[in-house]
Length: 508
Image (cartoon, rainbow, N blue to C red; front, top):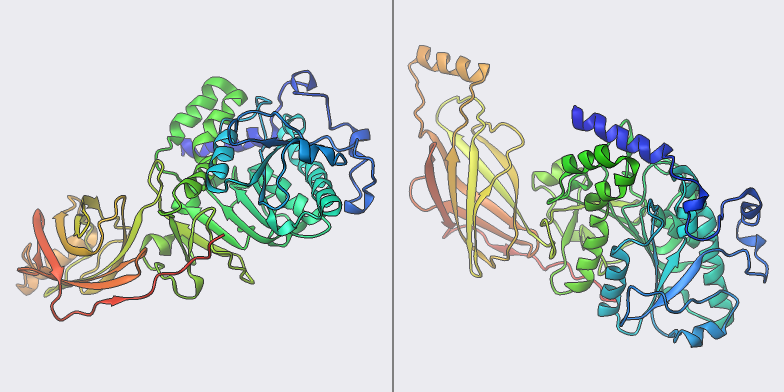
């Protein structure tokens, strides 16, 4: 309850934050009524005078990804050659979000470097709207429209003056910058190739019409990573609703491994609003680092799976690649355009490389007696052709009913290759439910007392998400399962073994 209240305070601070006045804003103030009046009519108000464009466009270089050494000013074609702009290569526009400090965050240079690492001949432009982003949050959120229109003018100028193909344009926006990307795409005369939204901001934009936020209509393809959707009272720092063609929710979108939310909240309590940036960095910025990871580890892409809900995914029901039901996370996403936004889920490690390996385990617990529901603690060890993954906790989200089949999701952080053997260990719960006592009394009355070893597992069906292989495992010795006992399962001699072709993703 305490953490929920604290999170409400965080979101309230985000929505109504009162930062120091314009004297601390980097550059000249940009949100005056007179300035805004130049931009309120949509894309048709453009003139040949670009003096009203306050947004800066810095073409960074692979050798100095953290330095702003060459700016391309819309209207000045000479700047393209002066900055060594490559007219035939892909162009990335990296767009930051709201800023408390008024300065660029360290992730920008990391993303620039990763983009050049993957696309050596690309143009990577950092869009600088710091003067409009370093405002009260509601003002900065409103300024996203103005910045989007500036970028649209820049894109239109590039297309008209140098015949630059817009299919080569990829906007990458973080937090408020994701919505800036949407406004840029919607105001440009023609659609850009792709927009990637990295945890688009939630407050002010959640639940609004598509024209007032990032949406699938803003580019030929829009993909989104949601990493900080935990919220209260309908608010969250990252937007919860799907806003792209493909929306991926790593770890359900609400919790990221390795992030300490309690410590983040304590940081806010200690440092006030100026602690906000550090407080949300881990979970909110995880979207950026997942995208960087996809650029640097092309041969090890994280896989996401379409699912109706996080709960169903956490039970292992959605590890299918049929009919575009799975996709790569990040840069190498397969550009599938569905009529409805596709919610996809994945698990990740706590650090880069983030890829894990997903398995569905379908287990039938059988019993000769009318046992009550049980809540065992199960650990599983997997042994494969490439390695082992030992003592993994099997996340049991519901009580286990004997004589029924239950599905579980299990993930490993290492590639064990083809699964050869599994070992289960059961540590029984020390808690007793009323139904347990009732069934025990009933057993005594009927003189049918179940022993600790009357529960049995004969077969386990396994599906590997990344390889799409299906396997059946049988108990090596006795199928009976009891507390503090280990049971070994090997591939069944007479079981089926299926392998469906892995989903093939398109390369850029």
